[in-house]
Amino acid sequence: MNTSDSLSAAELVKQHVLAMPMARTLGLSFTRLAPGEVEIEVPISEAFCFRPGQLQATAVFAAADFAAVAAAGTLLKPGWANATVDATLKIVAPARGRCLRARGRVVHAASLLTVCAAEVYAVDGEQETLCATLLGTARNLNLAAA
Image (cartoon, rainbow, N blue to C red; front, top):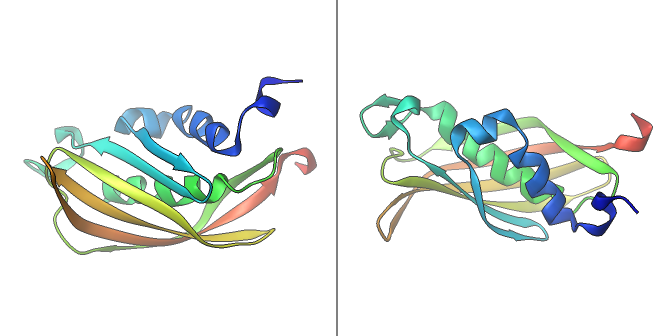
């Protein structure tokens, strides 16, 4: 039995995401993993701000995309992975504070494509402010067939 056989789909998703250089560069961490649901946090770093303390849209998109597609990944069968094929981000407020908290969820899971979504909140102390929402589509890939 290899180690991936003994890990849950959620734990495999976490392992795969945290192995990605972009996730590590952003400082992404998982705060919740459940079937069809993921919550991540990304610290607000001046390196990703377009003005002091306010994140540029690319970092907001990355947090939303990671959360949504990771949520989709938690429902995959062993030996499968997924990748973003489409996503739309709507920014509704500035992304400033201590960190971003993105909550991803599955809207509709199917064998080939999974529709997923995420809400991204700017966190400052105990206050959460919705700053963006994403609707995405993940392509499910059978790794054995690749």
